[in-house]
Length: 380
Image 1: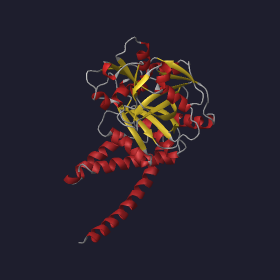
Image 2 (image 1 turned 45 degrees about the vertical axis):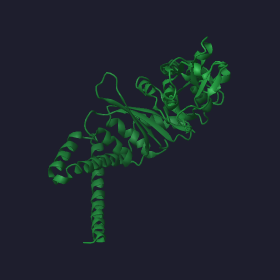
Image 3 (image 1 turned 60 degrees about the horizontal axis):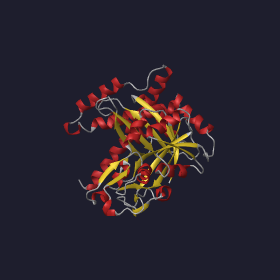
Image 4 (image 1 turned 90 degrees about the horizontal axis):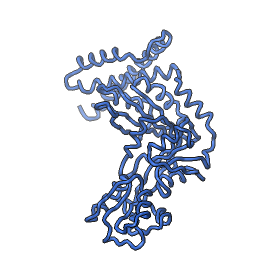
């Protein structure tokens, strides 16, 4: 047989598969209608497990790794189709719809906003990028931002969540497990780290450099080129600049923004010492209450999955089945629980998409825990 003969045969098989797939989905729809009418659950794991074991047993030896994947996807597609046809909604999906309809159409201009650090911090720059005239409230830690929101001390909080070169801000992700909040907007801030000193300090005299651990990571190439200099992490880049300004020493420096130069009366010995010129940090704006402003085209979710083989694959197959674009997947170990992880998902999908609402309605049934973190737009 020629290559074209093989392709023609594949086409014939595909036609047969499509016909059988259509028949299977229609039968699944009837099963779904029967279950709904009789109050039966859509998902029956024991039945699927038996079917997968039977598929493995009856598959040719060379296909035993592939056949279960095919049937697992078929099961996910069938359940998704059943849920779509049933048109059922959940308390969460109704809450999302109410937020879409009930949130004010304009993003606020001048609310009180909590951010970690002191004046000159990059979080302050993010606040000013998100709001026209923010009333910025500086707090001592990332956790204090969450606490200020929960206590009603401010309406919004701003937190860094990832950097284009240093990756995720892991302690913020860890805090997300502990606190209840919603993301209402995000932004990207271009980050340029400068070596700042007290006036008159010479490069050859510097013995210590202070900055936040993320900034230190982002400037690793420059710092590695220095000899005899200790690098000391502190709470924030602006805190580092203030520490240098308040000290009597003339042998210390800080990695901080150029805004800190005038703010703290410092000099810049070396500008833009980060590893790459294309260095951006992404910040999220959080609120205690669910608000979905117009144009929300990104959604964030957080969940724990059953500690069984294939649970992440089955979850991801639902994204694929509904045609939803997943652009970030982050996992963090859950404290005090061995080898168990919390998963964070970012989707580039408008909140107005019926497929997204369907996914949010379905996921709680396949997760151990599920939290909808919000739908929002990003300021770039």
